[in-house]
Length: 500
Ligand SMILES: Nc1ncnc2c1ncn2[C@@H]1O[C@H](COP(=O)(O)OP(=O)(O)OP(=O)(O)O)[C@@H](O)[C@H]1O
Ligand SMILES: [Mg+2]
Image 1 (cartoon, rainbow, N blue to C red):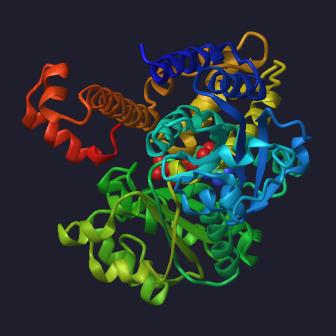
Image 2: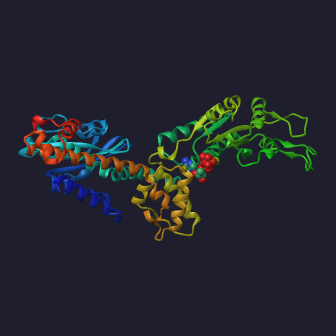
Image 3: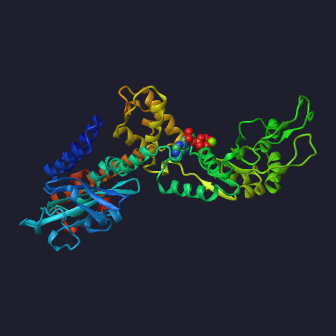
């Protein structure tokens, strides 16, 4: 095995072992130690990008005596700051000639061989986001700088999910404390920009009479938002009347909404008020509005226009002072195109649209929501639930949550029931969530492909060195054809003139 593969092998064994829940700093120190022992790294540093502070904090170091708490960079500052800001690696072949290099740790000031040191820094990326940087310095002894950068990028990819989870846990420590103190302050948990925008919209619209249309996938909190709008309005002294347009049979729906007069139909022995009348002065919440049959859509349109209607079998026009909130997980514009939803009704409803983001786009809100649901379930179960461990949290943050917040809530409640010692661990999570790590599977595949390419490139380079740059001979050494070698050389952008 060549030395790079050996290194990858050791690192993968280390990272697999971490299911035993060794702490982040220990694992990462061991990781840097492997790089030092195997591939001649002299100093190493793992930094985390703290989005909340817009700073990059050095978390784990190897070979640097200075206390790391004091080292941090602003976004764009120095090499590390630039790598995080741009998401691109930087390789400095010679430290003495680089003004970007700040040496904040001071570890290299007294070095005599400083001019022989190369400094490599690669971004640590989780999905499309840069979560930190890995930097090393090392003596380059005729090694190919680009190759070393590629290699470092691969090992950085391997630790990306660990760095990501560490980052969101750190970012949330403060926030988690504040939230646990004011857990009842707002029923809407979340701190990501998308949810902050939603909260702002609620504040703008709550105390008006505007019709609100809430859209979003199943389980994103549409019902919760509807209640919040009502509660924050001056109508909160009156009723919030909910009606699920998808759950009531079509032939009963009209009666539910508008009520009937005595004798309106067989069995109508008494007058009955409909939901619109009951909701007078308050709010009516028409959930699953996309399920409303076309003939009722016409009647609803009339109410929206002049807030008046007639009971079934009645002639009297009844006026109602009601605020309307509707919600749907359907794409109403598509429903219109398919002639299942009236466009005039859509425009009447869509006065003030609020769209709820899916949970997978809400980043570290998963951590906050998890805490929130643990807090709630603790009160419900007669069981001490202390929390969730980091590895289980890592699984939760990398899952793609098709059922959104509701699915997370069910998952936490189930896991809290199962856990034996009050700390939710991977084994307590539902199998669907453990299996469904779609995102991370994609990432692992990406890493695997780049590993294969890197290995192939290293084999070709070795063969070319052996054949002194002669491609026909190199092809023979590798047991392949000259055409394939030529193709790969072009693909990997290997410069044969530089082979020695
Ligand atoms: N931001 C949030 N903070 C706290 N709890 C939330 C949040 N969003 C949703 N929930 C909770 O998640 C569960 C699902 O939310 P809700 O029923 O409002 O979703 P929905 O969008 O109406 O789903 P559906 O389309 O299936 O009707 C509820 O128990 C709700 O209280
Ligand atoms: Mg709902």
